[in-house]
Amino acid sequence: MKDKMKALVFSEPWKVKCIDVDIPKPKSNEVLTEIRSVGICGSDVGIFEGNHWIVARGPGGHGHETGAVVVEVGEDVSGISVGDRVARMGAGYAEYSTQVNIIGHGKDELSGAVPIVRNDLTLEEISFGDAVGCAINCFERAEFEKIDSDNKKAIVFGLGPIGLILTKILLNHGIEVAVSEPYAQKRDIAKNWGAKTFNPNAYNRPSHGNYSVADEIKREFGEAHAVFEMVGLNETLLDAINLVYSGYRVMVFGAQKLMQIPYVNCRQKGVELVYPEAMVNSKADKVYWDDALNMIATKSLDLDTIITKRISLEMAVEAFKYYDRKKWIKVIVEPKKIN
Image 1 (cartoon, helix red, strand yellow):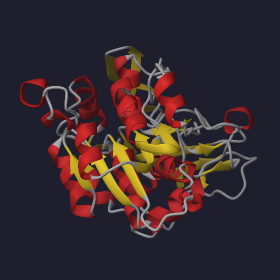
Image 2: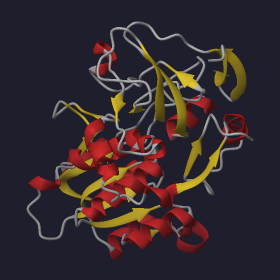
Image 3: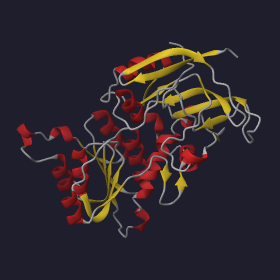
């Protein structure tokens, strides 16, 4: 094996470059993996822009939506062999990695974690494990099984990849769904799946005064048993609180460093604000890796629909610099891809 690899380094906000670094050597309890597929996550874009709580300055960055192949196994590792396809590797914006993705994953940050072998999935499918796990967590924290209604309803604000996957999971469970999303191609995917779609940008002051997309959702769709805030803006949090049934839950998943909670609005409706923790459900003491990978294996999520393009590691430098939220949904970086 060669001694050097290419890796992205996020040295400071708005700075990223592709450099040659030493290939990491696996310790006795580690595996060395070749990264074949890594999805650009909204958290990675936030890290690049300097407005996310995670900081990742080392080679490979945060790069956590990975599908990888094991190329070397440490002497104290069992159950993993060379050639296995594995999930949950971190520092994935590199050709090789020994790091396991544990940031934001509850107890794993203290106790460590091992890669998950899934030879029944493609490496690209494996790279969706993190996003699907986050969506399952959001869905389960809503606790629809406790809702006594023949017409369960949900509203999703924001159709990034996790918002779209969540929408598909909700629809697959027979829940009526409305979504609010400014970009047409994302709305079109949700509409084709069966969701009722709304464009928040259509309701501006010159044309609608103070009548907002939340007013239109309430008129056309009504309030919901669960509202999912996947954007990370106080404006959408206020809309979510406005649109949830009294006494029911708003799932706050959009990332903000500081959030202003509207006490009066929440108090008057008895709203519960729930903050799903990425892949971890602390309430149920549950991590969603296996559930996510098993759901992907059922082919029920239509993941190909949300992939915009596949690019090389070198091309990812420009992708981060000029990230196009309007045109792109999920961009897959393939570190072994030739420009």
